[in-house]
Image (cartoon, rainbow, N blue to C red):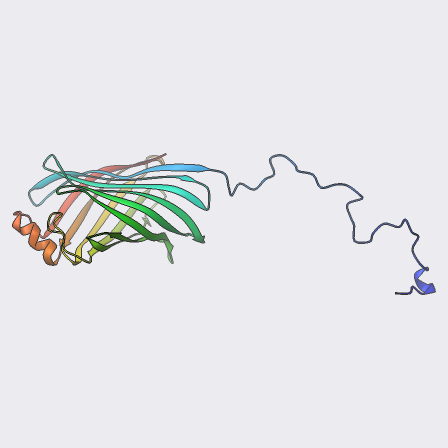
Length: 246
């Protein structure tokens, strides 16, 4: 493009590039200014460590999870167990790889191990977990193993804050199986539904004792197996325990 006389003519050969504003300075890396989205960190949450009593039974319940990784990828451990009459009745252990795919949501892939009464079982696990609209903590996982078909587990809970320290937490869960497993006492279809209501007080953010009540109802062949062992297909229990994390 030719420059007219009103523009002062052509620029000199050594003129600065009008698109450069760094005065010839090179790009530099300033320490402690990096983004921390890949920094590793972890957490251990003992969500439930409680005594349970009701319907003529006493026992203990425990639910723990721990994870380590960055914002996008984590190794995740989940443990849940029930002890009744001094015997481990059931336990579920999962080791998963957690990968974020959207805001507040992640997929999980790994292994599940069942122990307790009957022979142990190992499953492949795939699921999603995260915060649904209105801050419902949601978890939905599908499982598969040769000879046992498919299984699925769904869990949702919500926190109702009366104060910044007094919190009521309702919870709902369900388990489903595609095949009957008589040795483990589970029937095909909807196996059981559980609900809980726990009121905790956070002495500190990491330490919170609680009290509550739980209800569990079994269905179909699962209920039949329980009744054959002189158990009840439905039970209500009072619980008291503590929640810890670090």
